Image (cartoon, rainbow, N blue to C red; front, side, top):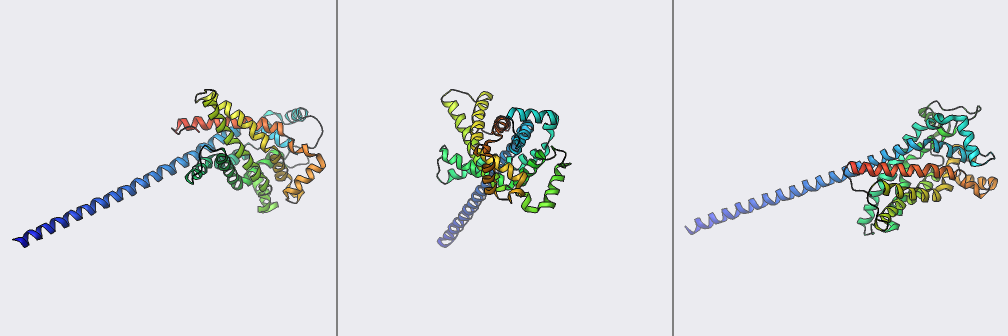
Length: 326
């Protein structure tokens, strides 16, 4: 009888252990499922952020394309005369419709690649730095994250920038054969200059974009938070507009010389043997150091509104999709 009792007791213990194992296994499986679900949600949020970034940058590009065309022509124009005289000459010769449509498709493609990455990757890089112990509100972390995002976006999107510049710059004179389409431009550059031609000026573009993004996004965030805390702004259009205006000014001041060299290299790279330093030294020697700020006014006129539209659309899109503001 004692032996039978011990056997029953052992059986009960074994059954309890089996149940415990099943419960533990179920708990582990549940935790794994929860972790997988959390990862899926996180990936979805990242993908959504990239999508909103591309959409907002493309919207800004559509609005500011005429100013971008004028900026590119001013940077390439070696004629005399004031900025306003040269701008008026372009408007008179091309017309507003021509200025709006010239290179518009190429500009949208460029923002769909470069703009999507540089703004979309910012939060991910900043969060990664935070996971390594870097303070999230430290300005240096913001600049590093934004500069890195800009560098990655420009490295990937360099050919789209080159095609945009060529579409906006070519065909103004009778001696120039204009591109019939954006695809035509891609084909002609690839056929006549090869892969090297498509990435001509990419170094200058990466530096320019890293400086631009490293100045633009942190200055927007810092300005926005300062306005909320010190000037008692509430979340909304007035706050986003004021902060983006400040960001546009800071970004223009920081990146104009780099933007000048980038444009010269992408449109006339063969003239400088595809050498960025040669482009810089020859331009300064021939036209003076202030030539680096050729088109700076047009750059500000373009980058200011571009920054404003980008962040206004981006913040509104985030709000619409239920994402917390920047």
